[in-house]
Amino acid sequence: MFTVLSVITAVGMAKVQSQTRVLELAEEIGVLTEERNELLDRKRRLETERSFLRHPDRIREQATDQLQMEVAPPERRQDIELLAAPSDDQPRALLPGLRRLDANRTETD
Image (cartoon, rainbow, N blue to C red; front, side):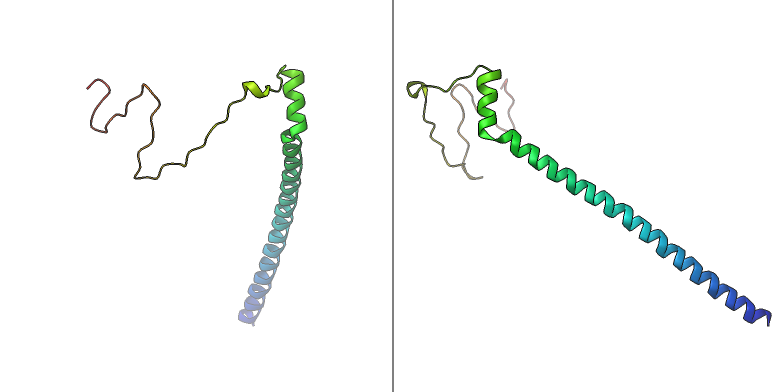
């Protein structure tokens, strides 16, 4: 009789423990879901702010009003020719006056 009562008690305690764990996990899921929703909302707000800050009209206004910049007249503009990026086996071009250092040499060699 005592053995049967002990087994029933152990099974009941295991069931209560598993239900407690399920409730704890449900609470944790709720907290994490709320945090996720807050982060998604924050992301949306930051994306909206970013698009506002990057808008060309706003940048133009900031440049002219706060920085006293003006649009350069055509005679002061220069075209820049973009070159293809060198591949790994092709050496990079150096600016005039600079020299390339070998891995085994120092600048004073």
